[in-house]
Image: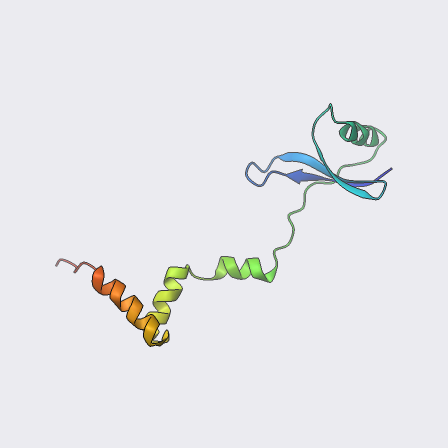
Length: 108
């Protein structure tokens, strides 16, 4: 017996690609394939008046939100270097790279 059904989306195309369903207490991800036995069961369930719920984007946790909000890692390292907070070894390593590849001087 089906107790819940929601569409699953392709993260690239944003198209429905499956039905995430609970059948007899077991969770399944069923492809939208008319030859699939479980999909046929879902279609019968819908024909009886039930509804497959639309996909709902899961809420992002703090880790993902932070990852998206942090500055690019190269910018973070540059901030540490310019603040002089990286320690002697860090400062020397960054300075060696800057010396080996100097920024071009601006022409006036």
